[in-house]
Length: 377
Image 1: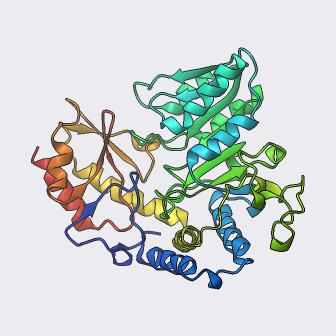
Image 2: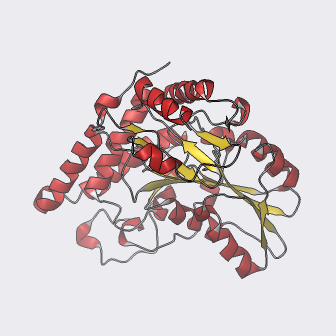
């Protein structure tokens, strides 16, 4: 189902064409209002009761679980993608001589933890080169061997917009006994994903992009077989019995159930959680499949209007619907971002790619303005 333009839900001026959701999503008015309610709890802390330290995280956890396609017990609340990826790196086994496979030009948060782990255990990180046609699935499948202990990927490449067939990668990994770790920050909420289909060992997503929520918050999926792993920090709230504020000095060795043990400290920030709850609920109301179909129609509208001789895009079968990387024959013109921003048209340049990432707030007028500006080059 195509969703009509939702710009009325945001405080985006009519003359602003914001085609840069992969950089940072704007907050919906309802999310701003919810965060304001949370801030009011800190203004008047006597109104924020001890049970709310747990009820709001539980609500956010449950909504995030629905978008991941799992149950709440498998979701931890984290401050960032890098925090969740470090939990994965600490937990997963990597032996001497074994490898972690990653993609070239992958976002660094999903590179650095593996490099450090490999150094510590005399393993190595294999950085796969960018395929000439950006078919990452073929490149990864061809690289998996008996030495492959871990593959750390995204569902959508953060610069080109290339999408991966994670089902095929998971099936090949099963044959060699490897683990799959995913950073879904550039796709979850805008591209369908189901834990039951892909079966990652760990999957993390920050909320400030396609989950349409606040900065400094994210969610980590942990497969039940890894619930025995060590948390990254030992805070008071991830220990069992922490709901009883009168008994916190009865120190315990046991943790909260499931992936809750991996929650960050001070997770009960009411402004952050209330904002995330509002955003997640709206995404579920729209439906991720519907969001994906609608954004795919918007990016295809741009593709069909591009000047063929100057700009190319990835084939539709390996291009994420919500993510459009534009490749210029002579490279992205150096003055292009400034030229567009002077007209209140906002995009990102990542490496050799002009990254165009609309969301439901982008109108046909916004797209026409972008196409018109590109056409003058």
